[in-house]
Each structure stands twice: as structure tokens, then as C-alpha cells.
Length: 326
Image: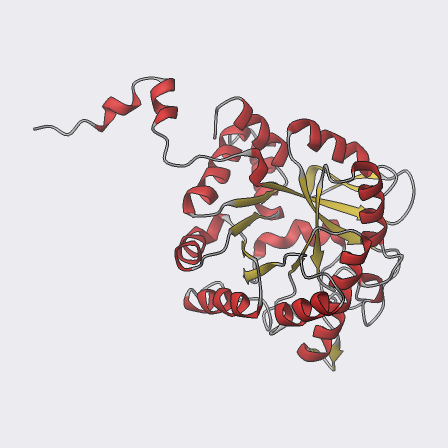
């Protein structure tokens, strides 16, 4: 007998009925760049269509996201000044802290506010922690990461997301939050974060490129699979409530393995380089933008992600609305 799987592909209604991967707008998180200053909406050259916003203008984007049905954002801060210990990351009047307070004032509980917890945007040397010579001092950095996460919670964050890849950071942050009465603030750990060439446009957007060396001594070697599983399981043991795999596109095998092994939600971050490739290909006429956006998103979900961080969040939400994906 001939097998006829095409029977279930006969029309759009049937194809949607039998879809194996179903997604919802509530799973989308939009990364937003906020910077010091006033009346700023500055396009990022390496990420056409993405902007840096001052706090007084970020509502333009937040309103647009809400209208599209995207109600979760993750803040990345761009300070005016930087120093050796990244003090702007945990300052009471730091840029992310100000953005959180203003977003909470304007939107109350209508938006879910997440913060990236790292030092690289705030250090004068661009590394993700305190230096000892030319090496990042892991354990001294933990104290500042915990202090940063606490300052975000105090300013109104609903969730914190450490991205530094220091050993022990989840436990340090969990202890700091718990000891200060923030036991209900979840931690979404960048558990499996590779040292990737896909981050280039982000470093331009945030001004966070290291001034010397690279981040390969703390971010993961992209050749390694088992190490990613170890990082994920370690972060769960330390108290992570959600895990993230970053980047998404080239690491769908890792997303699948992590999702199969753990009992917590898994997020995938479609990073700046993925966004830039789609935009560049579209501008050159080489690819169809909407089809690429749809396939990137469904690829991450199909691999096992239940949460998707993407600069295309509004576009993905619209494609869900239109039934192209979802």
C-alpha cells in the first residue's frame, strides 16, 4: 500500500488542524535598548529597524508592542559613563533602573519587565565582570551581579536574566534576592550561551565590545554539546526557574537536548546577527523577509523552546494573528 501523508496537506484549514508545533504571542519577549539622555530614538546601523531609546521615548516602542499583543520585554542598558567595575549596572539611578520605574509607572502590570543582568555594557574594558589583570575574576564578579539583580528587583523588575556566564552566578543571585525579600522573582538563566559571531550587531548597539581579548574564557566553545547540558543542569541546581539557549539558529540541537532533559521552561534567543542576516538578505532581494522570520521562529519552537526572544517580536505576533505561524 502506498503511504499518502499528502492527504493531511490538502488545504489550509487541514494543515493548521494537524500542526505539531503551536505557539502563542504570550511566549514572545522583545529585547529593548534604553540609553541615557532625552528625546532619543536612534536607529542602530547594524540592525536596521531597531532603535536605542531614551526613557522618555521608550513608550513609543512599548505601546507598539502592546498593540501587537507582545507583553514581555527584556531591558538592555546603555549608560553615559563606564568604569572598571561597571558601577552603572547596580546604581540606584542607573539607566535600567530608571527605565523599570518609568515602565512600571506607565503600564503597571500590563507589561512583564525582565532585565539582562551583566556587566559588559557598563565596564570600561567591555568584559562581563571585574578584572584581575587581564582575566575576569569570577568570584568577585558574583558579588556585583547579585547586587545588580537586587537593584533591578527593587526598581520593579518582574524577572532577572543573568547573561554573564560566570560560575555560580545563579546561586549568588538567588541568595541575594531571597535574603532581601524577593523570593518570588524568577531567574531566567542564560544557561547555555556560546561565544558566537552572531553577537556582532548587538555589541554595536550596546557599545559592549571588549577593548582587548575576547569572551571565550567564560562563554562556551561552539563545538561543545555535553558542556551545554552540564551548564543547564548546574543552573537548575543553583535555583534557575527558566533556562535560555543563545544563539537560537545554529544551536537548535542544543535547544532540543536541553528541553528534553529539564523540567523547567526553555527559552531561545534569536540574536542580533540572525536579525541582521534577514534584514541584509531582504535589502539585497535574496530572501523573503516574512518567510525567513516565520521559519526562524518555528525552528526554535519546534526544537523545544517554549519562550522566544526576538527583535522580530512584533512581526512574529502579526504572523501568528494572520495564521501564517501559530
